[in-house]
Image 1 (tube, rainbow, N blue to C red):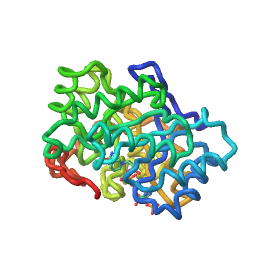
Image 2 (image 1 turned 45 degrees about the vertical axis):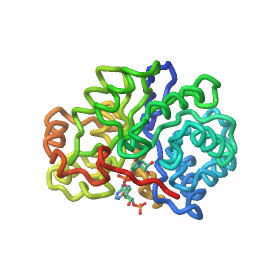
Image 3 (image 1 turned 90 degrees about the vertical axis):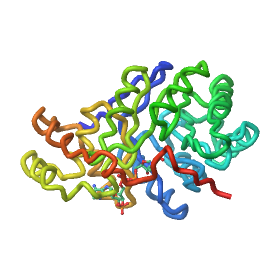
Image 4 (image 1 turned 60 degrees about the vertical axis):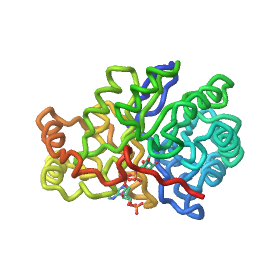
Length: 282
Ligand SMILES: NC(=O)c1ccc[n+]([C@@H]2O[C@H](COP(=O)([O-])OP(=O)(O)OC[C@H]3O[C@@H](n4cnc5c(N)ncnc54)[C@H](OP(=O)(O)O)[C@@H]3O)[C@@H](O)[C@H]2O)c1
């Protein structure tokens, strides 16, 4: 049985703990990959304006014959649109590209503390508008460090429902995860298999052999048992299926701890550092 558990967010909404990510899927390949994921049973898709494939995500969901309410859709604000007026336009564009009148979850993609005079607070207040008018059922952030979350707590009303951050066995990101745990912010782990980099690790391959699963399944299961939300990306049908089949095993505490001990701290980070990332598309 592959029943994906739901995680209840701090606003009462429920998100499927396992979803499907579409970062770096070319627009022309996106509808096929998302259709395959929906066929296998995924009901949660993670996209972003900066992935340039929201339209194809919407097309695949419509073509699946599933009701809109059966699929949880997340999208994210472009780094180019933090100014409130731009953010309103960008959100309209996201809904129009998806072809739906709401998203389940909308995130600030990056805090960009070195751009916009360091102001992500007015951006967050703009997301609160989308939440109030019902066009974003939940709102959250991505790549926020503890100090960014503390600033939102001090200066705004709404606690983000989620914080989507880089987490995998080589970067367990404990400080940010534990702030989230203490303040009711669910952690979403991006690049959950470090884009494949952790799959040859001997600790992981040994556990995989022992439990009769693949390294990717073991790592995704580790995330699930830690309580994080994951959405591995793949354009390969056999892997899309493999990544979904992680609910018929339970890792013991020794294996869980062994994987967590692979943490390399900052050296394990594969993506940009949120404190210094300052990219905005034209
Ligand atoms: N908020 C952010 O800033 C941010 C940043 C990065 C990612 N994300 C989100 O997180 C999602 C997942 O992260 P990601 O795409 O960076 O990386 P990922 O899911 O950790 O890894 C994807 C890579 O691993 C391969 N792969 C997938 N399943 C596999 C398996 N079972 N065995 C072996 N290889 C496998 C894929 O290859 P093939 O596709 O060739 O099969 C692809 O190259 C993204 O799609 C996006 O939704 C968010």
